[in-house]
Image (tube, rainbow, N blue to C red; front, side, top):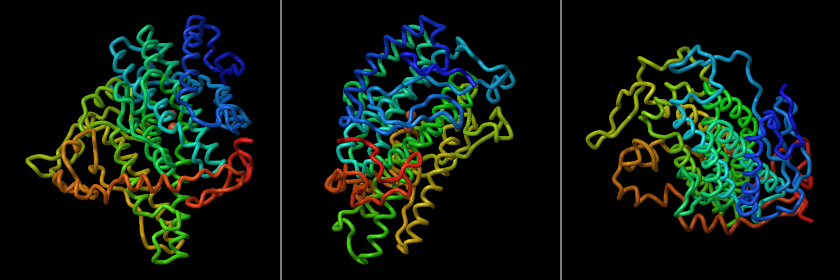
Length: 471
Ligand SMILES: [Fe+2]
Ligand SMILES: [Fe+2]
């Protein structure tokens, strides 16, 4: 395993001390990062001890170290998964050639754009989640929020390292810009739509980590295939952290489902809202909102960019090695499109449909989670079920963004969509209701009324462990 310098000003396993120029460049970016963290990171408990894991190695069994830490003192570091000896490019036009360790000149711009787009999402989500601790439903949930936040901060470091190490002056400027954009700011917004949406209640937070962080998983997994080896290795390690974010989201919604289901069972015919819990129709609308915005993140269904990324061997498919064929040439994919006022199937060259291929993997994963939540409702003995809307529903990017579709994916008019909006998407009244039940529960071992306690704590600690010492 590569050596990890844990006590350097920037912990790393990339021999930063041997490249003084790069080290100085990153050290001069660091104060701006910390200033951003203080201004835009969690708005509460920054000076409190939180029980967090820190990356200290890239070994699968030894990377996480758990201890109390005050967030501004978190050891944000640069960690790349160890290189695979003699790794070869395994997809696209360069298949079979040795991986790139330097940026090929002809791909410099597209590669920089890919890295900046990924990088921008990391601080954006921290900004979106900034105020959630005030209404944390338990100390464990608060701790999980902080864990996600510090790791998104580390992901920003991971991407900024690539920009500084491989893109010279342009890369340094991009790294500075990453600290200047702000989620939801009308003048300097974050790059992607989902990352400019407000996320001010915990139902939205769980849906965000379930659906939007899960887009991140699929993007990182396809970049982990990259022929640009530093990017592949960076993303491979980021995925180990991302897994926790996804589980916070998936188990978070499961805990809402369990609590709501139990209340429905105990109080038949009663609107659980009157009991201070999240009714399933509202939960469904929050799911519809974040799922549809997250689908946008995969990009257009028919995309020449997607074809270029794959052709250049920079971005592969999810689990590329499991596929039988790695050029994606001479193959077609059927994509439903709107033509002449109706939906028709269009045959698209596979390389141009790779965003949709990745979206297929994502949708399948989301469907798996839905089955688990519905199984829970079934176990409790409640008949209602949650569903995923069609991937055409409520889209702002790609083929379907120019038309209106109902939640089943049928083409409708814009007027019909507006007439049903409050049925499908959270209304202002829904959001107001959710805010009204978001009462802080900051006592050790206690949990908010609308949420069931998790099955287990974290790192073997019980739920009544003092995960954040608010004191
Ligand atoms: Fe991330
Ligand atoms: Fe994440």
